[in-house]
Image (spheres, one colour):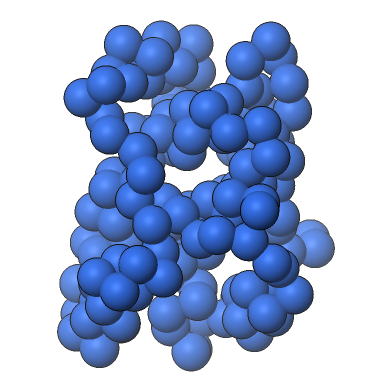
Length: 138
């Protein structure tokens, strides 16, 4: 089963009906079959960006609590790899959340990142491989 890695930008769009990309985010999840996952760094960014939206924050945390969104990544075990990624992309600069998602994509060959963040077109996983992404048409 494909691992669908959810980025902050996607989660914010999905959780806010007034976001211009909300319809795309909803349609994307309906059209994709796979296990939803993210990392705690993405959750921190998302909760921060949704700081005034208590309902959206509750829905996100409920999805984590029920296991609808998995958190299979542990930063402690991957800190050295994350540091290398952040150093490699220091000119962008790469956020901790983005580095964690790139590392997760390296760890699962079938993983796909769902995002609105164009930096994922620049990032590469192990051996300079393109990271499979799903983004809205521009």
